[in-house]
Image 1 (cartoon, rainbow, N blue to C red):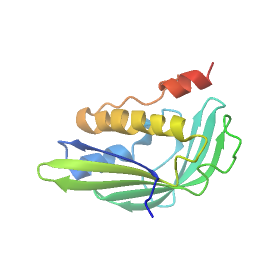
Image 2 (tube, helix red, strand yellow):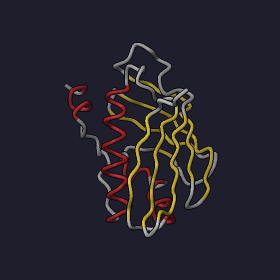
Image 3 (cartoon, rainbow, N blue to C red):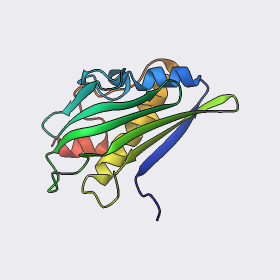
Amino acid sequence: MTDRSYITSFMVDQTPAQAFAAIIDVRGWWSEEIEGGAGRVGEEFKYRFEDIHRCQIQVRELIPSRRIVWRVLDNYFSFTQDRSEWKGTDIIFEIARKGDQTEVTFTHLGLVPDYECYDACSEGWHTYVNGSLRDLIATGKGRPNVGEAITESEQLLTR
């Protein structure tokens, strides 16, 4: 059986330690609306985008310069019938040195194409992970959500 969960990866010139530090700086790449922390196992943070998406996430695993695992404890989408989407899923960052570069692999384990939110969520993760997080690692400046719709899906949902 093939895992159909959402997976994406990118390469940067920076070290695994720099990538790790950027990932746990969730406000620096995902959203400035994040409340709570992501730097220690057991910490929890909340994400919110208008009344469209809210979630509560707990840090489950931190292996410096190698791996980060978050568990989605609670989630709400205004645009899905199925209220269980994302709940109990894991968000995993794996960091590995590949030659003179660092590869960051992002997996949202359990975010599958059967989900109503899959198109909007995969577009969002691509934007925030492959765009904003990568920029934060590479340049020190991400492009987090600052309360305005960034992706096409966010723009459609806010109309």
